[in-house]
Length: 407
Image 1 (spheres, one colour):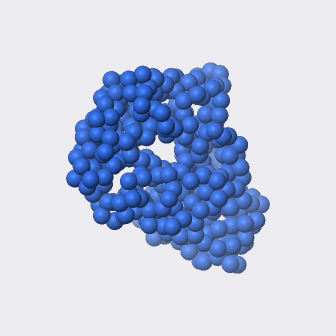
Image 2: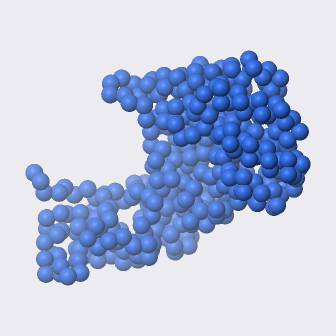
């Protein structure tokens, strides 16, 4: 009863086809694969779940490639971006395809970062950015910067709607910020609020429907959001005459904003389009994993022989069939989970290596040198940036590559 069972199996049809393509036309090295058919399917799903008048805003950090961003903007017909890194911001403002886009910062930046960005961009482009502000202190710093440069900064206030990761927590705080903005119209302009709520996807739910529990939790967050908007309108009505950015949502929650929402008009989504494993949640079952790491097998050895334990190593596969074969891969220790073939495991006694990874499996995994092991990354931004480019697939065939940008 305690003897390990054989967990190995060969590729399914999807990965068998890609493995054949990589062996015939690939690059002989670890690569990030982007399945454009699956990406387009995810884009269609997203568009259905963010109908007008909701606006879709692309989370750039999760999709770090200019070509990928172009593909998404064309498909979704959006010109809204959420940017998290100063280097990305400077690059986008320098690119003719994106320099006129509506750009909202996804986190508050140190005032020193504004100084560096300002040096590298044209003043008129810099003044169109929506800067995120989380405290009265930061707003004061930004005001001082704007006065020094004799420019106007567009301000979006970050509000805490339950995540408790910073931001204004009470309406009296946001009203003080709105008063400061009102008093300095030549240097500050109010552009709206951002209330991020990924915590609702983890709402406790012992019994009942998980998505229903999430929907109720979002309702509670929206009630908090509405308090900030209502209070601001009451005390500073002139600031609310134009259409404001009322941003919310995220990959795990975006689909809930198409109904029972009278507040949020701007919804941010990134990772749901490529589906790393961290986003395997009940709210994204319609989305398909669209990107993978593929690493070639360099060596196949029978059994599992551990240094200094050679004299007993023959016992390992006798007890555990998943130690029948040892594979050494080109690269390793990826920020990812093994996807195909199934039943491959890291060897904890051998240790991890980023140069030649070691995996064990049963003979049913049926790999030979030059075959590929496929992984699903746990997140998108770090993996794409480290690899430097993505290899594009259509119908299981390589059709090109897209460069990624490095932060």
